[in-house]
Image (cartoon, rainbow, N blue to C red; front, top):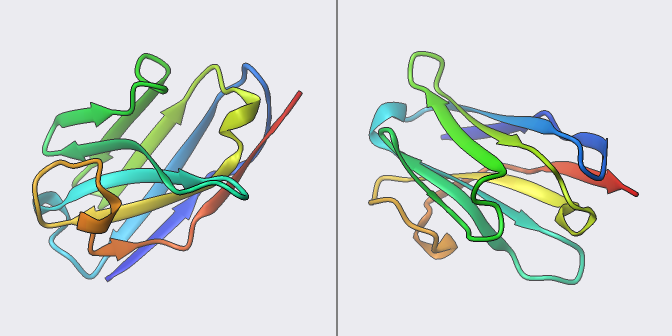
Length: 120
């Protein structure tokens, strides 16, 4: 299984960015996909998850971020709007055969991450 994130970069506070995660080696549509992030000196934190078309968000991003998936393309997306400077982090994509969850330990596969830098 391979998960490859892309779309990270530098964005001004208040701006938008869309991350992508291309999956291979798994029956994508059957997996719960999640996005997590980790800033320097901080623990990894849950951002959003999607199972079929059911979505689940961290309170801190609900209403600003949107997770979606394209099962034909084996890709999951994270559209991020009104980014805050404290949201600068490495964003990771993860996959699990289990139900939708915010618990990182329940995800079996992880990507290498993509850096999001928020400038003020």
